[in-house]
Length: 214
Ligand code: AP5
Ligand code: MG
Image (spheres, protein in one colour):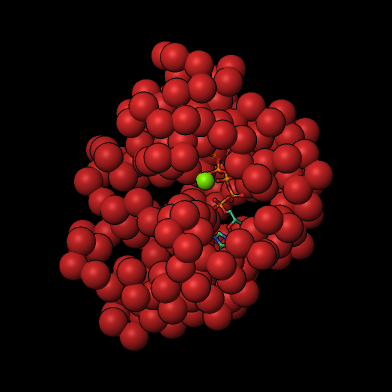
C-alpha cells in the first residue's frame, strides 16, 4: 500500500502517518524528519535545508526528489510506505510518478487531512518536539506525562524554530501557493481521499483506516 499524506503544516500528517505505519507495518517516510535529522547531524544537506526551513520556505525540489526516489526503492518499501510531507509541489509529484511508473508502480491513496488556517496557528503554538527522538506532542491535545520531558526517550522538548507564529503564517502561505494544487492533481487521478482533520486524533485515525480498510 503506497500512501501520500497531504495537508497544511500542522494538519496532523505526522501524527496520523506514525499510527498508520504502525498499523499496516509499512515505513513512515517524513521529509521534514529527514531534514531535521540531517540538521542535527550537521550534514551538508542539513546545512542547505536549514536556510530554507528557518524562513518557512520549501527546500528546492532538486534537494528533495532524488532523496525520496532513492528511499522508496529500498527493500523495506516492497510492501508499501507512507510519505509524509512529500510531494509538496507539482514537479515533486511528477518526479515521484515518473520513478514509480518506470518500475510499473503507482501511488494508491493520497489522503488530504483538512484543517482551516485558524485552527493551525493554535495547534503549532502548542506543539512540542523532542530534541532526542523527534517525537511530537501538544501542550493541550497530546501532553507528556512529565512536563517538558519526552515520554519515549526522556530528552527535553522544544518549540520547533519554524513553529514561531510569524513563520507559521509564512508556511501557510507557501502551502496554499505551492502544495494545495496537488489536491487537484490527485483528484484527477481518482486517488484523492479527504478527511476532516479538525476531529480528535483518534477520530481522524478511524476515518483514515475506514478508507484504507482492515
Ligand atoms: P514538515 O516537518 O513536513 O512540516 P509541515 O508540513 O509544515 O508539517 P508539520 O510537521 O508542521 O505538521 P503535521 O501535519 O505533521 O502535524 P503534526 O502531526 O505534527 O516540514 C518542515 C519543513 O521542511 C518545510 O517547511 C520545508 O521547509 C521542508 N520540507 C519538508 N518536506 C519538503 C518537501 N517535500 N519539499 C520541500 N521542502 C520540504 O500535528 C501538529 C500539532 O497538532 C502537534 O502538536 C499534534 O500533537 C497536534 N495535533 C495533531 N492532530 C491533532 C488533532 N486531531 N487534534 C488536536 N491536535 C492535533
Ligand atoms: Mg510533520
